[in-house]
Amino acid sequence: MTIRVGFGFDVHQLEAGRVFRLGGIAIPSDKGATGHSDADVLIHALCDALLGAAGLRDIGFHFPNTDPQWKGKDSKHFLTETVRMLHAKGWRVGNVDCTVCLEQPKINPHIQAMQAVLAPLLQIPADGVSIKATTNEKLGYVGREEGVCAYAVVLIVKS
Ligand code: MG
Image (cartoon, rainbow, N blue to C red; front, side, top):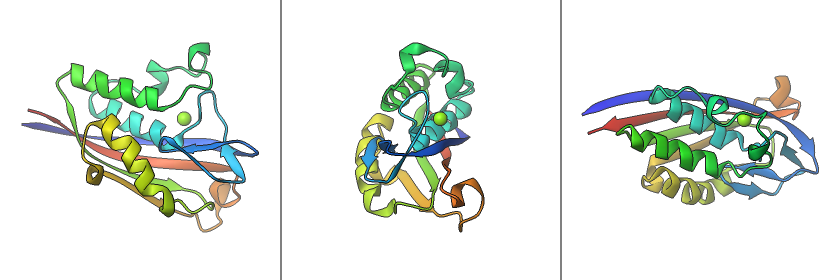
């Protein structure tokens, strides 16, 4: 059995009046993330971690933000395609561990819903999808609520 680790990071600006997509669901919020796709910062960090673990470059390489076909795209599509690429190389996902950094709204009430969406896409049990949240203690761009960022660490396994 071979195992590999991968790490991902992503950041998006926040803007009033936008739908806030995070972890594959819409979260009630005054502000939503802006971007070329649906700006789901958690899924983007997760894709980068998975692609990195498998030596498959990064999300921008496969789904460039200059390509009109990805405009407004549901990021679950990127995750599905990423997992498909890993499977094609003989990898399966072991577990994932993510942290989202933002001041508000509170993410904790939505974590189970995100796990329920992401686990089938990753093809692992829900308890293999760890999603954590922290504020940035009012510091920097996250603290000023100008942006949201996410970190992800993944393990992938080849039998
Ligand atoms: Mg992104």
